[in-house]
Every structure is written in structure tokens, then in C-alpha cells.
Image (cartoon, rainbow, N blue to C red; front, side, top):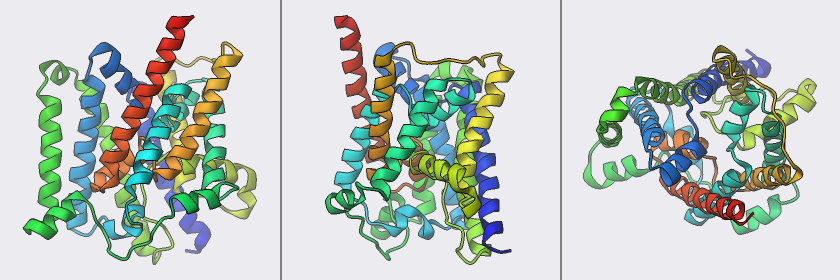
Length: 349
């Protein structure tokens, strides 16, 4: 196969996993901001427990298959660069605040776009442009000056590997313990156990993340590392997809492009199957302004944190990298602040 073939296969892999994620968003109501809102304003933890199920499946599957050589954790983005706690916290806070202001994260915006929400198209475009402005555009030098990434040759690292180095327990067993803990916590609630649909779609999300790690590891091995080892994330991939749509004749098809397209397609199928598809647009200029501002902040925050609510909160978390829980907590805090500001603003009017 030549390089074009090795671009097509990752795209097909991304499309398949993205399709599952899109279906989970529309059929299973899997949503980061929705889960945060449920906890803060309805004291309902069902969608957080759904997230825990997804994490349990992703963590257990990733480390089990890494133990038999099917997932190469040494080649992931999180293994190539040293963790920057400051960038994780700053990026997570900015991303979470932007998510609340915009009303969706990148993944959620793609899912809503698949349901006919044209407001989400604005978020996707602005977020993609903002991400690439910070990643490789005019603001890249400032980012590198403030949060210069440090390459490392240490290989896979994270909480499971930390335990392995200090106690001598293989990373697999630590990972399985974390996965078991998340599963027990999620299923301890009797009401949640009865909502089998949430458990099912949480499992599907975990399998979608796992499919990216397994499939890209396979393709990397057989392409002599032409293909990167990666799974789903929705910050830089939005910008990459916009570039592909504008410059396809020059190449650019990738896992990221397939993943983005898959979420939209899966959401479209899910919304039509439930009879929920309908065209929607902004109600007023203020709403449009919030979505543009929030999308821009998410693009910046997602690049600084090396991932979004999915990229760090699920994909990176599945490898138990140091950054994932820090970014996820920071996103929660930023979103809580943004939601509080919005609600107080609504109350004032």
C-alpha cells in the first residue's frame, strides 16, 4: 500500500468508531455538558454513571489488549510528550467554560449537527479554526512560549505504570482495579441498574474508544508507523476536517476526518430513527455570539490540554495517563463556572 491507502484505512476506522459515538449521543443521550448539568441542577448522576461505564470498558479493554500486544501505548500522543500540569488545568478550565457558554462541546456539536441543528455548525467551524490558530497558526508561537511541549523517550506512562514501577504490579492489574471500581460505583445505584439503555450505550462508547486504539495500533504496525496510534478526540480534528474539505486534492484523509464524519452520520441515523431530526437555527444575535465565543475558547483550551472532554476525558483516560483526570476535573470546574454565569444572567433578565 502507498501513503494514500494508509490514509484511507485510518479514515474508515475513524468513521466506524465515530458512527458508534454519534448513535450513542442521539440514541443514548451521552453528553458531557448534559451530565454536568444533571449533577449540578437536578442531582441526577445517571449520565455520569454512564460515563463511568464507558471509562471502565475503555480502560479494561485498552490495558488487556496492550498486555497481549494489540495496543501500543508507547506510540500514543501521551507517551511522546511529558505531562504539563499547568497546561492541563488552564486548557481544561478554558475548554469547560467555553463548553458551557456555547452549550455543547465539539463532540456534542457534531451530534446535534447530525440532528439538524445549524447552530452547532457555527460551533464546529469556529472551534476548528480556533484550534488550528493556536496549534499551527498565528498564535502557535505564543502557545509554544507559554506551554512548550517537551518530547520524552520514556514510553508509556501514567498511573498504572507508576504503580508498576513502585510496587511491581503489572499495569494491567492496576487498570482492571480502576475499571472494576468505576463499574461497581456506577452499578451500585439500583435506579441506574434498571436503565439498561444507559448501560448499553455507555458500553458502546467505551468500545468505540477501544476500537480506535486497537485499530490504529494494528495499522501502525503494518504500515511501519506511517499511521499514528490514536483514538477519538474533537478539537484539532475539527480543524483537520475543515482543511480536508478545502484541500482534498492535496491529500489529508485521516482517522480524524473519518471520526468527525462518523459522529455526524451516526447522529443523523439516530435522530431520524427516533423521529427527532429537525432544522434549528439561532434565536437571537446574543445566542449566536455566545456560541462563537464559546467555540473559540474550546478550540484554544482543547489544544492547550491536548484533548477535549472526549479526547482527554475518555480516550486519554483509557490509557490512565496523568493528564486525563486533571483535565476532566478542570473541564467540570470551568463548565460549572460558565453555567452559573449564564443562569445568573438569565435570572437578572
